[in-house]
Image 1 (cartoon, rainbow, N blue to C red):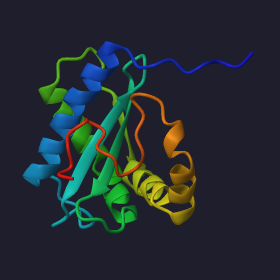
Image 2: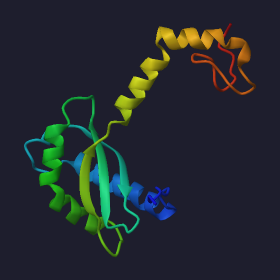
Image 3: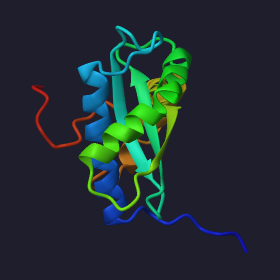
Length: 150
């Protein structure tokens, strides 16, 4: 029997968000002296904390796009410094070990958006106009019910 994935607890979410703010502030201040991070604007999009709060995965993306590989290498080298700074600012029994990954959610959202706007999908949606149920909407329709000026 396979182990199911549980949704994160409120504590995990709260700790993850606090860590995200702290790590983003440390990076923004420019306290990290690493050649791969110098002069780079980095966005910390999410921090996922393990159920035991001992590990945290920090998702980052370079602001304005670009290569994320060197940023991940620089953050890995700066991990002890970041963990020490987090320990000074957060009140936890155990400071989580930090792991860094590239956030691909923006790429995935862009891919889905382009698929929804493709002529094939638009054609299929157009063939089913009369089959929409109350509360459903087509791509391009106002989802919040506001009049689009027509």
